[in-house]
Image (cartoon, rainbow, N blue to C red; front, side, top):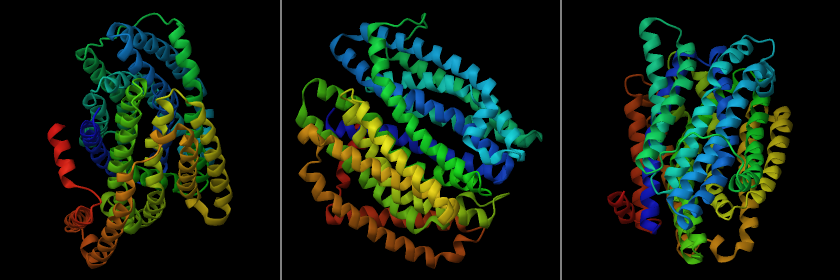
Length: 515
């Protein structure tokens, strides 16, 4: 995959992810407007996070990180038929584990909710969370199988359908809330029931896409083949690493559950910083992993280094200005996007504080997505697991210890600082890989110019936000004012970056034409 094709694949995934995140904003704004930040919203947050947590543990965070490199190499060396058989065995094994897990979770749901948010005990949101959790949990079965099929598509260079699947989720959740509102029904319950329905829709979408790509996978009886045993051996450390990440989230949510509305504020802030993380970091990671796997299998060290450097350059050129914006103007972003209906100015202020803290860690979260494929492409999942354990310790100390000193923002600080700790460990761990793990001279020339252009943009946005203060708080004008603020930031950043040589707009134009 040449650099321009790498960027094209990134733009395909990033474009669909951007659409999904925009719809996600619409969804989250509607939920906050309908439910506020009280018991119903807190119950929804915990119930929805539960299947997502296990999904990242079993599918995205572990199974696919082991599956995609193995599938890519089998496709490259043994042909499509052998690759399809391997994918069918993996699908059968994953489905069997997930069915058992779903049944056990239905029985253990009260204890799972206490494990996620023990501060809910004795509160109205506890029983609601248990009820919502039982309805939402089957989503893990459908979305994890969809993640595996997405891995098949990504390994064959087809990114669109897998990237479009989250758009379907948001559309169905929005439709469910609108329908419930129109007929005078229970919006919260309609929202929760729409989650597993959306999972079925997402699975159907990628299943059809995989079939059209020549990988019409059949459901077969589970069997433990030598290849599947090897997949499990590689996946277990990745699953443990994914589990460490989820433990970090669990620790943060546990701490937050003891502070009034903190669970809601942190979740809403998470949704905001996930926009650039999803569009840039996750997109480049999805494209980079199969590309690196193929290059390393072909012993193309120069190509691997170039792919890594261009991925870092592209993603940081888009991430660093986003991070600066989240730190400099969080309140205008939060108040315009979320403050309506049952969501108050107090909620906006709390969410904005968390957004600014998460913004400081955004480049770290993206760099993790860039460095981890270096290990996964070599089928090394043990090293990231060891690093994740250290990051977990950093997270736990800051989240729990910091809660006594700085209160409910401690989990946000813990997430950010643990993210940077993980990056330091990944960089040090990749040193023995040699030149392939080091960014090239072009990256080093451009990165400081990217930072400078981002700081100039931040100063302009800060001054403009002060000038637009009244307009940003006026109901009839605030959307236009925020749009103007965002557009001014984008224009100032890209213009400055182009002039000082941080990036070349022609490179993006060529990628769009190829995309």
